[in-house]
Length: 186
Image (cartoon, rainbow, N blue to C red):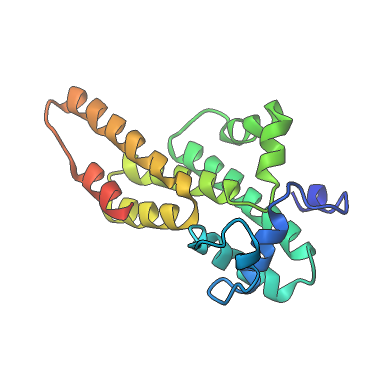
């Protein structure tokens, strides 16, 4: 991932510079916002992503920080997917984890953008792990972290609802703790 990122000078996508700027001051003042489309108000709904980028922004100069953080988060996403598949005893988990990136250059491109997609995949995968293993406190924390990292974190709610419905048919009883944990976290 690092080799891919640094094989060309540009950042992938158009949001990388914004996220890098936010990583430099994730909790600070944004005097340039009134001159943007967000002049009527804006809340940092990707705060945890910007906080996760902050060490890269503090330690690595220029846009190399965005490239390095994107490579790191992409590796975490694929590593998390591999760990999940291995935990579920899937055959050839390393191959299945790399399959989305190998099958679609669009997926690989999105994965390498200095945006929240990679962390979204990681948090979703960890959320599935917590859901399947009935680790409700972890599911609550991951749901909270997911929604504070990326607004797409809401996807955990229908996935959890589907899980609860399947569990109902399999065991004959409603076990709503996963739905409560996910809802409370979100």
